[in-house]
Length: 210
Image (cartoon, rainbow, N blue to C red; front, side, top):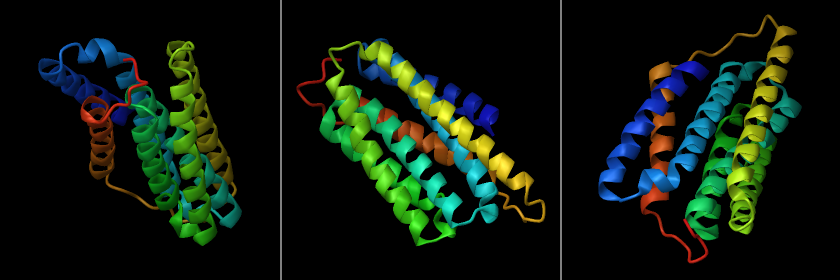
């Protein structure tokens, strides 16, 4: 899932970016770093969500709450940070909260209302924190901070997948769910394209210097 989505989304994102450069002079030169972060965030987040949904029957309420918190927080933070750095605090916070709360609530909803609430709260906080952090660092080495932050989020998601793998090894009797890869990757492509479109055409605050 990780390799398939990476190849498809990276290729399509390059094509989209080259197309936008025809209409927005200097778009690729200004935003190439953030376009890369979009690909990484979508691919690692998507692979983690795929893993969670595939094995969700093995989770109890406590496990579901932890997973909902992790996914909601990291999704909100990554997308809030990216859009916050390119468009400003308002649109970055709104978009980060929307993505984080949506992912955090939906991915683990089968584990009960407590898991959904945990995902919603984590997505809310992560979206605000991501945008706030990058806006505060616009004039303080943000180019060095972003790869560290995105890499850290990717490592945490990988660790969560490893934790899930260890959990399901103890429950071989659990029946797993299968999902259509084409539909799932299509959703990830739409998320990447929407994020790029907001970056290119969304409102920008005066503080953004890109």
